Length: 287
Image (cartoon, rainbow, N blue to C red; front, side, top):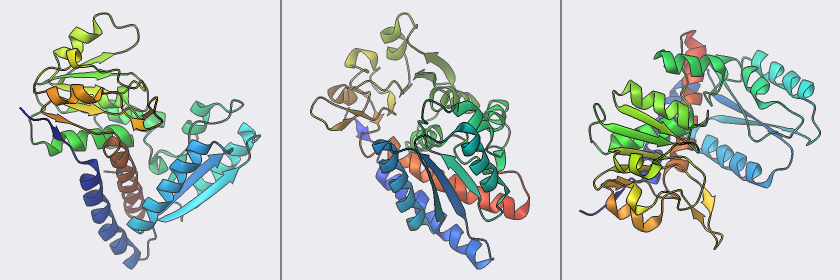
């Protein structure tokens, strides 16, 4: 069996092309989809991510509005800036770039974003709706992972899925999405005993650990689908995932790093922003 790469670049390009078409239609109707990104401080990695989102917006016909705040911004000042964006009808999506400086509580900041403008899908309302199976904005990385998994054409219902990592950004919402697809889901973490054996029994393995090469050959069942969410720097300085590169060959399908989940995450952000603009225009719940 030859492992097949799931081409995130190709899938993301298709999503962004559809977003562009729909954004053009909204603009023709007098609605200019707009994403506001709040960047606090001068974190170099955050600046790179934000620049990428600005490029994506330009490609997709979405207005990008960057709000820069200094490193010493207080929480009250940041909450005030969010309140202004929340009240601005020309802003359809709000994203606060993480991480935030130590003096700011990220949970309070995220909770201050109106659910209808929460295109990251991180607010308690959207996370709760996701768990209840209600319409919501799904966090972009898990949404991208699911789209990549569905692109293989393999069934999800009834399959054994293992998610390694329990973060609010990836692990927990990914587990909820897989449950909604009728997979049988196990969530593993740093306290899990017998991790390798659990992973080796998975038909679908999602690696969201943030450790280069953490998923090794003995942790992959032959013919499994492996979704590698990790974005790390290897000893040589190159980008790499949580999946040990040679181990990927045991899988039926796997996502590469780079060129995989990261590109899909950005595409799903554009899709969520478009949905926010359309839903706010019509006064409907986000789809």
